[in-house]
Image (tube, rainbow, N blue to C red):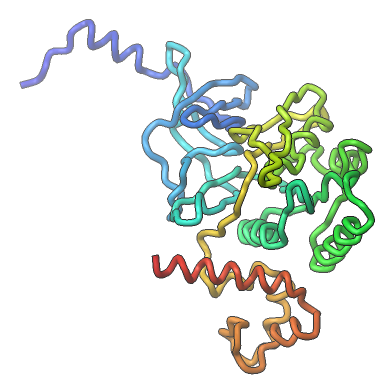
Length: 328
């Protein structure tokens, strides 16, 4: 027997029926709410409708800043994200050391700037290398920004120059920057012009300070350094895309304490270390893991300092993580 539809039911259906569909980009993520800027430059605070899955990756958040999405706008002004369009790339990390879920920092990125400081707080080479490996895996171009150089003495600067030499030799471009002296800010400004750029790094490395210098209207809250463990206080709580005066957007992300790699096999890891991958073709065995195999060209290159020991240690560190995961 067919149920008779009364006037109240019809009115409820009318209220729920979307008045239009729009396409746009997610510019802010505040937990379960997403600020979507449509192609007509309208902003809608939207929720995700239904469940979204990212091909084989379990993510802490299905929708991320930088996503191109379709939304349904309701008669009452509310809106729902109904579709996420294919991502050209993204930066992803393990949500926590014991987690098998991922945390996607941002999607559809033209460029990533990893802000590095050698103290207050210290950015280790292992952290740098883990970020670079992930960027290589998802084809995101990266610049390293060595920030706060006005705070460094002669010995500190020698270390900075050594790191710059190391990474530029591999093929990564580096910028020395200071928001006090404004060194490097003009170069960064030219670099991000017209692009969608992700700013990443530990809390306290000066991401928000650089963005303040790039954008006069941006009032990102800048935090002090926690003296107890020399890490920055978390002042950026959610990822946010900020429109720049000169065109393009920058994505300010919450400070990252660790960077766990995800979604790669142990055999793949060396492919994302360009200098290791290049030399590995000379190894005796095609499936060489560069650990203790005979006639390993990579081990020979490490011994003769053609490959940096710190980079090789980062490679081993990632392999160890993946091996631990296998037995969890």
